[in-house]
Structure formats: structure tokens, C-alpha cells
Image 1 (cartoon, rainbow, N blue to C red):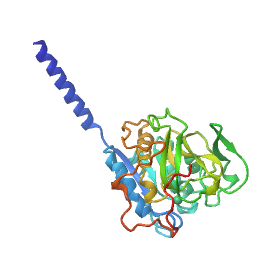
Image 2: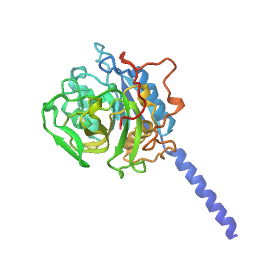
Image 3: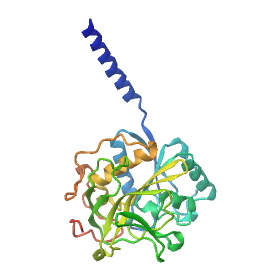
Length: 321
Ligand code: ZN
């Protein structure tokens, strides 16, 4: 009798567990694109790969929302931000592209607890929009300089801000580089190797901004011989803006850069964290290590693909440091 009761309890527990799993609704995600200044970024190419990364987790339900192009009709572009738990931005435009009303609706959404993920060139966008720069913490290019805020980097293991004057935003040739997790207790980086290798990508440096409510999770050393700063530059950051959570990754220049399990996993985890404040996804077994990059066949750029912008592909696939 006791045994039967025990089995029944177990079955009930399994059923209840299955129901709980089945009942967990997917996290609604808006993947925003439509423009990325200059010929060096190709959102039409990268968006499907970013979507695939999120779809594969079965954690998210992703809608791609494409903003009108430069000179397009923005009068009917009123994204329903509040339908989503998180906005993933693969979007880089100048300040004047969005009306004050559109900016205000986005600010309200984040302030009230919406999530934002800024991928690579998204931190070039909107140099003069104060709230946006508070959300992303640091950014580069589009005329940013010391008026945009200090430089932020790591020195002797600590995040420092440096008011030295100068332009914001730089990078050398696309080489592999080593990521160092400065914070190993945050849900996004918890359990990751302390150090791991990223595939050839732009290593953003000399980024500037308000840096308010910003925690830098990971850095990479910007080597002088590759037009670098000789400093540990921020690579992954989390920020708070009102009740909203922001995850900011500077990786992901092009399709070759996206084919890195380190990028994929931190992007998936960062998106879940920005949406919910938690990370339930398990770390993939093929995560890169301190001396070995990791790619996946399913994310290999198509045959004949070349990086946009007419620059030659990097010759060295070996990490710079
Ligand atoms: Zn880039």
C-alpha cells in the first residue's frame, strides 16, 4: 500500500513538473533592426543569425521589427515595446532618426522594467540621446568625445573612469582575443570559464559615456600592436535604468564574429537576464576555453561570404594575446 502511494506521489510530482515546464510561456523578444550606419555592418545578414541563437534555446519567442530606412516614413513606426520583455537592438542610427515622442515611449518602457540588449554597433547609435546613453553606459563614434563622458576601462582589476579628452570609439584589425570575466557571480557569467577565447572580431576600445549603474562583467586586453590602448577594455556589461535591465555586448561585428559559442551563449544568457533578472539556461558543453575557440557548423557564414565593407578578411585566426 505504501509502495503504491509512493509511486502515485512520484507520478504526480512528474506530471506537475511537466505541466510547470509546459506552462512556462516563452519570453517575448523584439529584435530591432533596420539600419546600421556605414557599409561595415550588415544587419540584414546578422539579424537572422541572432534570431536563430534565441530561437534555439526554446526560451524565447522572437519578433523581428524592422524600422524604416533613412528617409523613410516614421509616422506609422510606433513599436509596441510593452508587448515584449526585452528589446534586442541590432540597430545603429543618428539621433535625428527617432522623434522625441518615439524616444520618450522607449524611455518609459525601459524605466518601467523593460529589458534592453545592445549588440556591437548598437552602442554607436544616438550619441546625443541622454537616456539611451545612460542605458548602454558607454558608446563610440558618431561624434562622441569627452563631452559624452569619460573613458571606462579596467586598471589593476578595478573599473576606472578617465576624463582625458579625445574621440570615442576605436578598434584594430579583426583578430581573436581573450575575454576575462571580471565578475564571476553575476547570473550571466556565473559558471563560465574565468578566461576564454573569442574568434576574430573587432575589439572596441576608447568607449565613453556616463557609465551610471554599470557593472562590467568581462574585459579584453586591447593590444598596442593592433592599434589598441594597452588597457583592459569592457566587453560585457550590465546596467540598470529605472526598473529596466540592460545587457551590453560589444562583440559581434559580422557573421564570422557571431560564430563563437562564447558570443552565442553570453548573448542567450544576457537576453534572458535582461528580460527576467535570472538565467536558467545551462552552459553549453562546447563553451570555449582559455586556449581554444569554439564554433558551430550551424553558424558558419554561407559559402563565398566575405565580411561587409570591402575590408579584407583577417589573415590571422590566432588570438592576439
Ligand atoms: Zn563593427
